[in-house]
Image 1 (cartoon, rainbow, N blue to C red):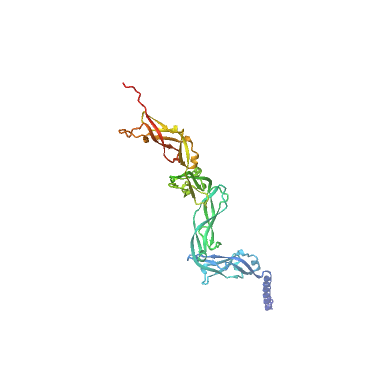
Image 2: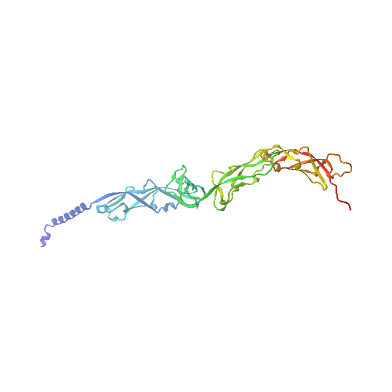
Length: 436
């Protein structure tokens, strides 16, 4: 039996080795080691604060944060791996003086059974710059149109400045931060959230993930106001030059304005009158013009609806030269006033009517009727047509024929051109009472 085991020992060892080799060959034929390329693997960047806390910022160069990985392993393993199982990490603590960071590769499965795992681009390339923070005043754009009969009032974002941060070379090119408010067909006030859009100095949109904003959206309140059209009127003070008069007309340009507002102040306003002290015609011999700003006469809470209108209103008081006409007044209508007791006055004129020349604006003259005219003679102003006898009291009414000044009472704006004298006969009425 012993001889059976020890005979041909070399041959037997060779047989064992052959069997092992045969097993290895069979295994390799069924499950060989193969390689596979996985594209589009994102590189996770960690410990970026090691750069940013130093007042610097970095940006990945040349798209090196997306890599291609080659894995070698047995077929059964390779066929069970996907790109989602591959993790690529760049630790910013390991940055080199050439601004490259080694990329570490692992898989979430079978990592210890891989023959090899390699990146075609083994390093992440970064560009490091000084970090800059820039405060930019917010600009507001609008789009659309509010409902008919309304306008957009005040637009108030919760903040009017945003902070932009990023590489100095890029932040320095940013010119504007803009929000756009859409108020299409709105007829009441509302609040909305508006995204912030950055623009460079050439007007191009800046959409770079390396640039950060203190706020990417701004909460904004929009006031919607009702509108209505109201007339503008004005008056004047003063007196025109001699021989001239104001027609009473003040031309306002524009003659009406469109205002907007809400609440009782808006509901109650039906017109705007410019006070008379803003237009004086003193000494004017031609149309007198002034310009005033209507805004100061609008109540609080009411504004001009047309944003292109600055509020200036032109006022023109119409001034015309006086004309004259002759009017006739019945002599019997002339009254003698301030007669002492027991005296009677009788106006003497050769005609039933006495003519007077009066002046004024032609429209006023044409509208003058006889019923608007009266005339008086003041007895205190009579002048005797005969010489007084010595010893007569100077203040005593002279009986007989006197010269009287006729003064016309005329409507405002019409005046008597020249003095008119008429004969007034004064008689004394005796006291008929009987003495006791």
